[in-house]
Figure 1 (cartoon, rainbow, N blue to C red):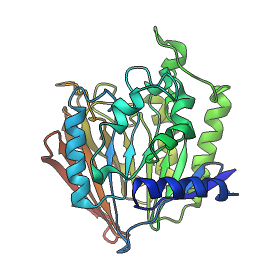
Figure 2 (tube, rainbow, N blue to C red):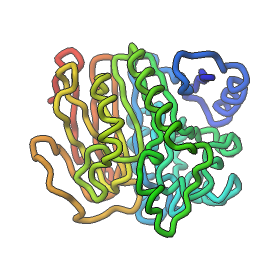
Figure 3 (cartoon, helix red, strand yellow):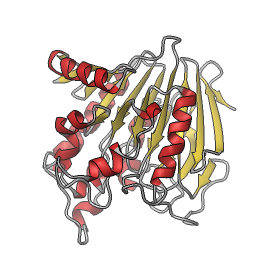
Figure 4 (cartoon, rainbow, N blue to C red):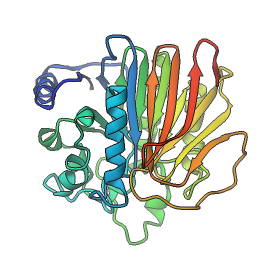
Length: 340
């Protein structure tokens, strides 16, 4: 069963009332098994949002400073929403729906008026070390209606569709060599069935999409020169689906850095952009692997975040450091099918 939910840029109270009303009324059938959330673009037809990952540390490791600059940029761009690329709560996710870290690492940190917009959130490997169902629970949305976390789902706007994917269950190491960590695999096992259904549903949804822009979001890297580097399981199973369906961008966290890599041409002859926004708090200085300089457009081993401003024909990507300084800009035109 798929769900159609609509979120508007309203006050926190109005957003909560709207969400709870539509939660009961807007479950409708869909071709894809992935749940679908509808988010309108601005009245001028544009869309703007922030992307941040690997952040939940009760304000430490410059999380509060990143949040402050996110608020500044969000106000300037009049953002529509925020995307979190996972590892939302360190070190071991949430202990339950009443875990005070939800307040200490989210509600109390991202308190700028301009950040009181919907947050679309995926799970990271650290989140799987806690109570996964807590992050998925509607109880958290009652505490703060900005919060929306599902395992895998679609966010649809007038001209862009976002496909948020649960990548942690793909990684063999978490099952075969978990070290001293305990992972919450409820809802995932049997693993083979879970991954097979997810890949099938994602491929179907991407293939059926008529959106001008198709963006896939996951926690784990596909292409990265950072500490974790390439995630072999995603390179094998997820990347072929992205290229076959001409996905414009893949956004992730996991590596605690800011990074932009361009791919080889996909099936339409255009390039897929691989964008890492994992600098929400603790970063890893000097931890970089060799990469083709023609593909690696940005590698920044510090804290920060990313913004996108989009229209049906153009996308402007900007990376910011912890002080709000612009590190890197990249623009894509659908008309010219070229980046400048």
